[in-house]
Amino acid sequence: MDTGRILSAVREKKPLIHHITNQVTISECANITLATGGLPIMAHAKEEVAEMVAHADALVLNIGTLTTEQIEAMLLAGKQANDLQLPIILDPVGVGATGLRSECAKQLLTKLKISIIKGNAAEIAILAGGVAEIKGVESIAVSGDVEALAAALASETGAVVAATGEIDLVTDGCRLVEIYNGHPLMAEVVGTGCMTASVMGCFAAVEKNFLQAAVAALAAINVAAEEAAMEAAAPAAFKNKLFDKLHGLTPAVLSAKQRLEERVVTV
Image 1 (tube, rainbow, N blue to C red):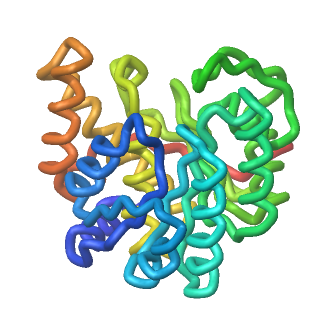
Image 2: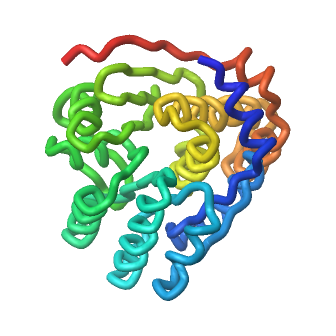
Image 3: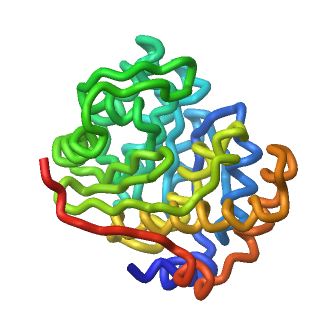
């Protein structure tokens, strides 16, 4: 898969990525978007989101610090993105932890056409109707085959599904790609999952094959994480290095260092 080509396109186009996102990690999401090669805008007010989407190249929706007003804004922004045929990336942070989060995710998936759903194994399992244990926003355990659950969710929603973990997987319900890059320090920094959704927004803005876009985004941030960990052994230093390494990542290095395995889904 030519992930380097997609990274080149991001750097050339500098897509504008509209976020309605997690207040805990909003700065990290903005900075990782810049490091990837895109331009971030963080606009949450329902009075302006539709107008802002009209100027954007992709929309990222993250339910990490949810309010009822934010749900309304997400639906308004999402409808405008659908009308303009812009990609929407959904990060269902902590879905299943509370009724509000679960109901919000259900509304977004029912009322909007989502391009990519990115979550940890528990979040993906819960959205697929499986059983999982989630503590706050952390995936603790999943009962069942994450690959099968992700493929079922992709088939049901028409979205590409990315389940992150020790080995990331991306599926459209027919094909599945596993990404073996990454580093354990990613789990020691709050916000790497949210940041990954922002990187996916950048890649989906320039690549309409959303399976390829999601895979390339995961490969890019994971390769950058590997390189960051070579120079930083503690979480805070690692986070800063992650921005720097992604900013300096070249298409040639990404293509050379990606470790991917693609196959047909078997369920």
